[in-house]
Length: 292
Image (cartoon, rainbow, N blue to C red; front, top):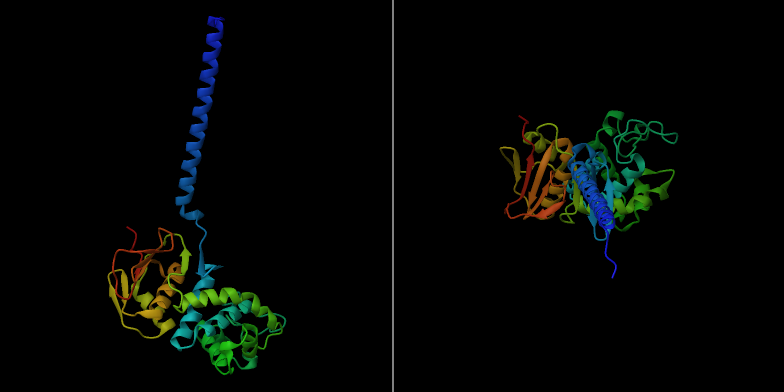
């Protein structure tokens, strides 16, 4: 039997201590990485602001300004009593024409084109000031669309081209999925399907401004302001149209929470629509309070 010598025992201890130091070092590094990741996840400056609509197996993403414009176009279709297909066509058209942004310039094919739908004053769409107004431009598009017999069952390219007279009519088709998903959410036909991931507001919201913007989009509805919240006594598909409109406009209106039918969208949590224990009648839209 071979006995260990004092030298070999000391060497074993040194190896053991080195191994323990290495384990502790790895644990400290892992802990530091976890702490850094946690801080980064909570950092407002690193939040990528975006909105997306999930309908069925499809998910489509827009920037926050694009989503706000999409919500206005869709709300006007709801106000006019048009089917969701009208909003789908309008959104695909505006995405192709302007990337869903209210731009004040045209292109070589239409140098005087302006606005969400790139409508041309020289072709009778209205004055430059009018077509740069998103409400006017959206109504002008729908005025043209409802004159197209059978637009509800047409391909988007056919319906859009009948209104727009584009040099590239097939281009509208590439935005059909986005148009369908956001239109379904923003007209209220798909519930809890639109979410925006946003940083927290830097300024206080104004419930009265929310009411004004809502009225512009959907028309006059009975609204009650209670503190920092706006209460709208509406139900059905219109309620979800309004709730999704509020989420899509949360960035510009400093909206922090939207409640409807046992579901809550909370800006700070960034986890989309979640079940809520608080029962609420109609839609409740809450804006941020002044910072102290």
